[in-house]
Amino acid sequence: MSASEVEEYRPSEDEPFMSDRQKEYFKKKLLNWKQDIIKESEGTLSNLQEENNHLPDIADRASSETEKALELRTRDRQRKLIAKIDSALRRIETGEYGYCEETGEPIGVRRLDARPIATLSLEAQERHEREEKVYRDD
Image 1 (cartoon, one colour):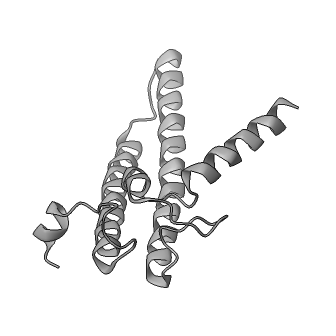
Image 2 (image 1 turned 30 degrees about the vertical axis):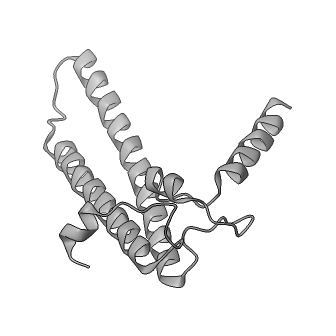
C-alpha cells in the first residue's frame, strides 16, 4: 500500500475488522503521531536549554521557573504517551491491536480512529471509569 493510499484510506465498519489494510492505517497513524510528539519535545528541550537563568528580577525568575516546570510536566506526559504508542505498535505486530484487554471484543474502528492507543472497548472504559469514581468518592 503506497503512502498516498494510506492517507486517503479511512477504515470503515463495513470491512473485516483489523484487516491488513486497517492495521497498516493505524500503524502509520501511530508512527506519525509519535514523530509529531518527538519533534515537539525536541523544541521544548531546546527552549529549556536556551533560556537564561540569570534573570535579575525575582518575579521574572519565579515566572521562568513556573514555565519550566509546566514544560517538564508536559514533556513527561508526552513521554508516557510515546510509551502507549509503542505499546499499540507492538500490539499491531502481535495481532492483539484493536481488541479490548478486558473482554477480547473488537474495540471498534471509530473509537480507534479517535484514540488509536485505546486498549478498552467503550463499554469497558465506561465501566472502568464508573468503578474508579466509586472508589474515589469513598
